[in-house]
Length: 222
Image (cartoon, rainbow, N blue to C red; front, side, top):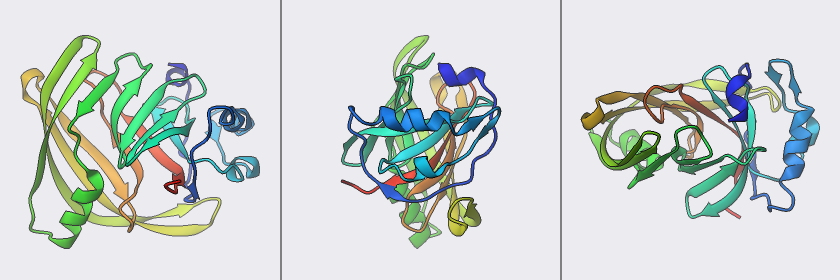
């Protein structure tokens, strides 16, 4: 995957609402993003800010941050494309499918992060758990039981570099476990007051680096 071998730095978050990029047009976003990469920094230019498309920034481990553009939407299932055609599908901020990575993953019956967030927010004594079925491509493994539990913590404030605006977020910690292969750990989600995942750190498969996603421009549902 192209962006696995590049180094990166953190990018502040720009929260705007935007739309799906038609296949004939979203290459424009990738072309503009080339001008926003300088050695190890990715910065948001005016030309990127003015694009009407929903976008995210992604990185794996210490790789360079890469622009993802929303290519398809089905209810709360959003499919994002990189300039080199890797695809990532999210469900309310959780990565549930990848295409084009070294080890692709599919999660069936995924947890609804947005609902879990509001349930815990409205009832701090509530216990939230879930079971999904996960499949990997390398080595091939199908329908492994994956168990989740959740904890919600008082959040922090993120400042958008471009908007110079403070965003209050809560921290949702997802503890996961695949007993059959002894794969367990924690994923984290920073969530705004609307229940949208603004930034996440998600471990998708064993023996790989974590996947970090940041919202650049929100999808407005159109």
